[in-house]
Length: 262
Length: 350
Image (cartoon, rainbow over the protein chains, first blue to last red):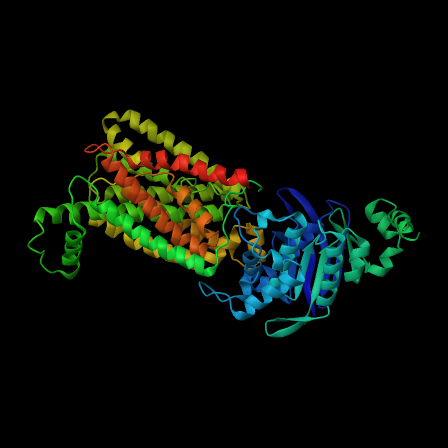
């Protein structure tokens, strides 16, 4: 089943179009790296896929027309981790991660259930922020904040997760741990509308090697259009990368790898 | 935002928070009693209690309580203190809501032009000389809401995304514009200047049970609805797009909460005039003490705002007695330095 389907989508900010007639289908169980140069429209693509921006064209999410879906339904299908996060008031890590449970929680004043608490503890543990749960978001380092936001995203418990540069600010150990975590998560399923759906991930990554540990498919965006869509393994040795980035990516990466051999 | 106020928030345990809530409720009750008792006429706690009991049960006044005491305390001081408390509560809740929605710790529904609109409405009634029962509060209330609607409509036309910065800017511009008209009117009709000025600085002088009866249901209903949306408010402090991604119907929730907040401010201004600072100080202090979560922040802001207003009114009517100071001057004189202290003290260490 296709979970996200963009048909001839155009979108942008004010009068500048960013995406120009994009077609993209992401099926259940897929893991997609979104690549491309800075300013190509990768973030806009993720935001439109989660129906967060006005767009022209057709967006279908799990078989329904996105424009007629309630926020609640979209948010039980897709969680999005943004690249930046506004923070004006001092919530603790634990409080913020619990807010990620919003669509799963009982409405109104009812407090979190045992299941909510258990899930929040588990994702905080998985993302390495359990020890930070009583710290204020505003006092965290960039990497710690990134992990807290990841925990909040996974607390939403959706079958589809969209990540905008999840590795930002993370040191090598946490990068590796989160890569493992995401790869393991992709093996599982999540309930959506009473059905078990295989977990599905799409993310903007700048590091191809890191992406390859998680993703099987590579979608490359340039100037608001998808210029390549292929198996990620293929992408490594393809001239496409050099064309996408206007740069000899392959030689650069090969040269880098020689450092490790000695 | 780095210089985020409230970074010193103590992470209370659930038990600690509960104890804080209970202590605050008791403190508010004590403050109300102090505000009712203080003044040129003394009353014992026992006599005050028997006056209140006789009105609640409908029984006769005990013989040892002079009827004059009854009229001073039941007819004048109690409704005045209660009106001040309720208005303070309404303003504080309204401030807390606007701060969350506009993601700005300095926002309030004054930012949206409610008070200046309400003020202008009142000014029109005053200078036109129309006198009908309740025409003044009703007109000012309607004018306040109308201003918010105009501000929101204008924002939607100018900025399709209705970003918070645009809302705040247009609100400020409208506020200043309306205040300009107001000052123009005040100059043109200088014989009404004193009354207009009182309106602009706020007062609880001669407020009676009717005023309490008007504010009470609005305060209770609006605050309860706001509390019901606590979690949405929490999420919306993280930004509109993120709130959508997390499943909040941001547009509907935002409009509903802006209306509730404007109604709270509108009814306050219509009863007491424009009174600043309570809507900033109370939520800010509560965030420091109890953290930012709205299920505690909203009800506690109501109590702290109420207590602050009742105490300010006490000062307003006693310090230069028998003359009264406009209460807006008192809240600003206490509020401004206090706010600066809390804000900057928290920042230096953080």
